[in-house]
Amino acid sequence: RVGVELCRHPALFMPPPTSGSHPLSLQSIRETLIRQEDTIIFALIERAQYRANDVCYQPGARAFAAIAGPSESFLESMLLETERMHARVRRYTSPDEHAFFPRALPPPSLPLLDFPALLHPCSVNLNPQILEVYLHKVLPAVTQPGDDTQHGSSVVADVAVLQAISKRVHYGLFVAESKFRAKPEEYTALIRGNDEEGIMRLLTNTAVEERVLRRVRRKAFTFGQDIEADESVLGLSEAESRCGAAEVPASAPLKLDPEAIVRLYHDFIIPLTKEAEVAYLLQRLGNTRVAFHGPVENGPCHRLPVRPFGPP
Image 1 (cartoon, rainbow, N blue to C red):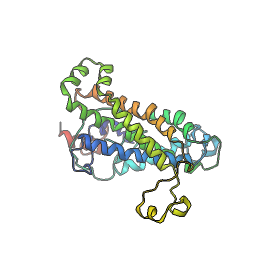
Image 2: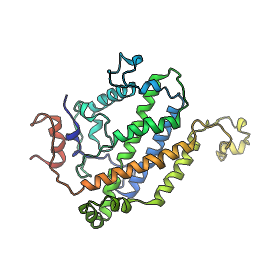
Image 3: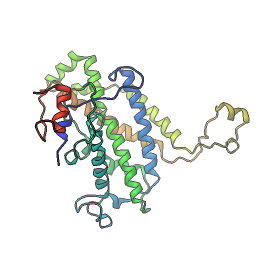
Image 4: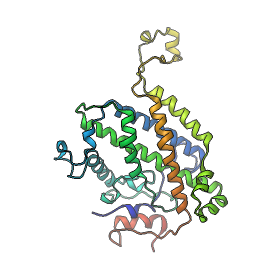
């Protein structure tokens, strides 16, 4: 198999923003991060409907011997096979998509898209940390103990959550590039001095982080309720029903504790995103020489770096 990890990082592209603004503008970044919040919260709610189902995460579990390898868990097998299919349709040539198994993926089968390059070449991939956090911190927080035999549904939901969190964390590369362009002299001095703590201080905006947490809490509370369409059940008047002004009662049962999602953002997603930003910035002034694995001429791993940087 052709290893795609090395050849894909220089092909860092981003789809056009929906608002028409530049993809590295603060407005475009904010819109994207807000949409990603929705995706993550809904994915967590979907996973929370099943029990913990610990057997899905045990390497070599006999229950899944026909699917997973002797050293793989059911989740790892499902995630790998999903990524293999997605790689063929060029998912991992996009900068906001980072594979958990980059060395095991086939090259794209579809023609490559020709987007303008926005990022400096880098090799940032925090998916090993994301997977570890998900298995040992996130799952226990969003699921009830036990086994309901819904193993396939559970790992399908797991894959959706992992991919959504990975996308959010690695969007820090775009955030970092935007911050670098806003203050190039300050960041350059810190990068050249290899000052990780200084870079972290400069890129941290506590007020923005607090707004994110407040927004996530409100969304998690809203999305986690069963919205009742019958106004009579909620005790609404006909006028209130027509104007849509009433809210679901605060006593309505929740599918998932909103504070669990807030803690996920506070303890893991935001810190990992900032870690991705620092890692990217430390490589921001580095050599743009590109390594790739595969046929030298016209192979997919050769075409990926040639598109944004030109032939050697």
